[in-house]
Image (cartoon, rainbow, N blue to C red):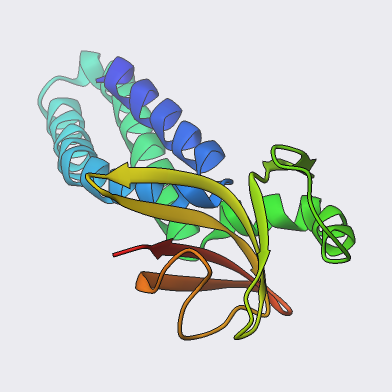
Length: 183
C-alpha cells in the first residue's frame, strides 16, 4: 500500500504541474476525477484495514500505523489536488508568474512560438467582437480543432478560434483562460 500511496502522491503532483498550462487544465481535471474514483476507495480501505490490524495484532501496530499514515497522506494529497484543480489554482499561479509578459504582449503583433512567461504562444489574435487571445495549445478531435490559451477581456459569445464549446475561466482582473472548438 505504501508504493501505491507514493504513486498516488506523485501522480497528483504531476497533475498539478501539468495543469499550469490551459491546454492541459481541462485534461488534468478530467484525469484527477477519474483518478480519484480509484484512489479514494483504496485509501479508505487501507485506513480501515490498518486500523483493524492494529486492533487484532498489537505487535503489528507500528507497521499498521505507517501504512495508515501513507494512505492518509495519499488521500489528503488527492483531495487537495482535486480542490486546486476545481478552482484552477495551477493555471492561476502560472499566469500570475507570467502576467507582465502577457500585458507587454497586448501592445502589438506576436512572433509565433515566442514564450510569454511560462507559456509558449503560437498565435495572438484580436477578436473584432472584443478581446485579445493568446493561444497556447491545440488538439484535434477528428476534423475539429480545440484551442486553449489566455485572453484579455474575452468576448462572452465566442473566440477567433470558434464558438463551439467555448469556455472561459476567470484568472484575475480582465484575464481569463479559455478553450474554444471550431465545431
